[in-house]
Image 1 (cartoon, one colour):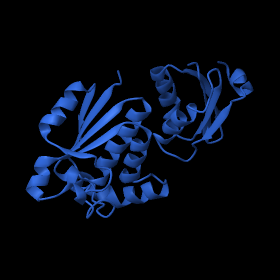
Image 2 (tube, each protein chain N blue to C red):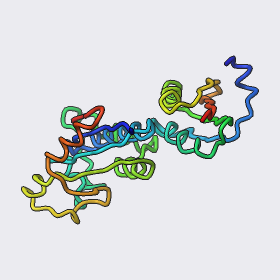
Image 3 (spheres, rainbow over the protein chains, first blue to last red):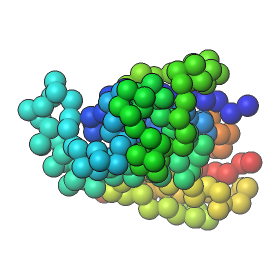
Amino acid sequence: MTEKMAIVLFSGTVDKILAAGIITSGAIAMDMDVDIFLSFWGLAAFHKDMAGKDMRMSKDFKDMAPMFLKAMQKKNIPSWYDTLKKAKGMGNVKIHACSMTMDVMEWKKADFVDLVDDVIGVGSFIGMASDAKMTLFI
Amino acid sequence: MQESELREIKALKVVDARGTSCPGPLLETKKAMTAVPVGGVLETLSSDEGSRQDIPAWAKKVGQEFLGFVTESGYDRLFVKRVK
């Protein structure tokens, strides 16, 4: 049976989403399936008003953020969007939106970028995580 | 394999992943492997130092044979044989 990885993506800063994207790509390369559960700021970042426009970084390294963004551009590091898009094209990556966050913010599935597959509750995610070999909280 | 033996290898497919960062070379290797027939060798060109560890780890996981790598100026040539 294919091994699985589950990720809770709670953070919405580009550095952490990119990390989630790179780890997802690695898991796909290693023949694993990946479920990503987007909640709170992680889900906010996938909103069409935010994705690709909001480049905020982790506050604890705010002073290094401009240098980091510039270096990433120079090295042609793909955006988190492109990283996840490519991972989805190469393997079984499912991205789930948290229904509770959507309820609070009054968002609809159509408000999110096309990477988002469906809307689930935390119970479904726990079901996925209990089948997974590893679960990360980012 | 010895470096001299590796340098003798005629790969059936060469994938140039130089200039891409981790996990680019690994993903390119995985993708290109499907185009190599069983018994053939895939050669990946990578400037990401992590590939020296990642590509053998991937080969072990998916049951292919990592033959080794040779270092050129600014990049490595990594060889994986498709055994299944």
